[in-house]
Image 1 (cartoon, one colour):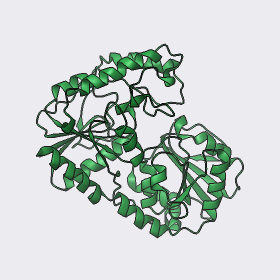
Image 2 (spheres, one colour; image 1 turned 90 degrees about the vertical axis):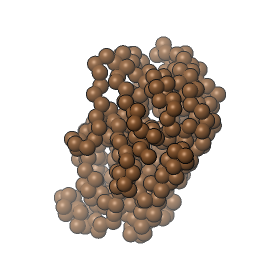
Image 3 (tube, one colour; image 1 turned 135 degrees about the vertical axis):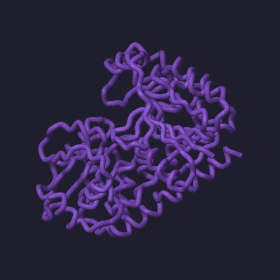
Length: 393
């Protein structure tokens, strides 16, 4: 049995999750490929796919994004004119985040005899184009007029995009694909969707490597040259300017916090702000673990999340998390045990929860132990291997 893990990127939250699963599959002795469009490192065993210069869909997308509310992520079409991966010698195609990479119509038509697993890293596979629908539920019966494209001139085109996706998937039988949600939250949404609801669904956590483990924070603070006499709050995002990640509300909270608290933000595209120490984007897991271990709290004020790697990694490193009660956060965080969920989505509630968490006597080794049980690669791989074998028979 040969498996092809397909992902637009080998980095970012979805790309990292796909890569970690690929690593676990290969280490178990099963034949697999990691098929990506773009990868930030130069490891020779990765398979790269060169993007063709003729990418007309990106031209249209830029036109949309110029008129679209910039507090949202990319609105992604099902049509892509970049090169498409050749997967003729594989048994199972395992799709992940494939926006800006896979042309649905050509890809599913060409591979209509294959068996599929699709891990949902956001809502795009079952919407007309958005990646998080917010309060909109049109994906249940069919997207027609997208509120996220309001005043763009493309609002009504979303129905075309949705129907194109439905037509592309029509060449697959109900038993040809299993849809996997990392969180119960996104699994339930997909089960109700018109595009993916007819396929079997399972819920399987993302996995976290063994390198994320508890280390006493005093030793790592010394290595990272961080102060030992202050409380340290950490915020992590691939792109700090993504408004959905909600760094702004955290800044509002920090304006009224004790000067004895130091705040560090890890990620790219940071904008200079008072009281914020920017440490850039970190692509090294050992260094990332040290940052978690050195911090008193990880704060995730995002207003839309699936099963974020940062929360899982922090818990596996013994670090409690404070977050808004959205998406997979509700499944990951048990208040008073491995962090706190806020009472509501507001700056005041976030401030109260941060203050409470900083005064709380967390058992950080217990947090790490529980995290290891929930996100270990062995259990995650076992669940996926069950699906692969069922599809292959």
